Length: 127
Image 1 (cartoon, rainbow, N blue to C red):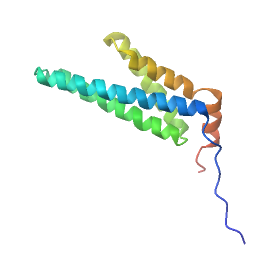
Image 2 (spheres, helix red, strand yellow):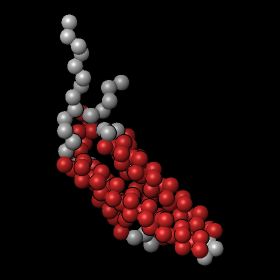
Image 3 (cartoon, rainbow, N blue to C red):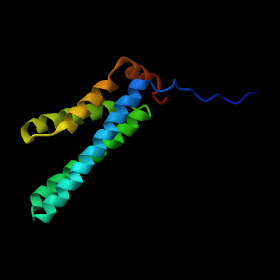
Image 4 (cartoon, rainbow, N blue to C red):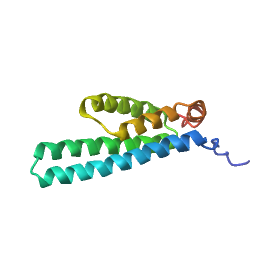
């Protein structure tokens, strides 16, 4: 009797590499800006500003975790990431968000291309 074969998943499409890579880059950029903003706010005694930067950094960390989960084939993570990015963009309209918001939108848009969607459907863990 032969051992059961592990399910093989197709290789990740290039679009997934680009989308997740862009999202990770965006998160690292956001963390850098967040740390610089936090230090600046702390140096000037702006406790509210420092707290806001900490909240923004927490959101960036959540985005990063979701991007990693998408990399491992979790389609629900792509959906949650999309909702967060859209929410951030809507808030960014009123707060003067920089280019990181546009990079995040581009990253999520790439994750919805056909090769990514097909790969995520095939890579779903069996229940």
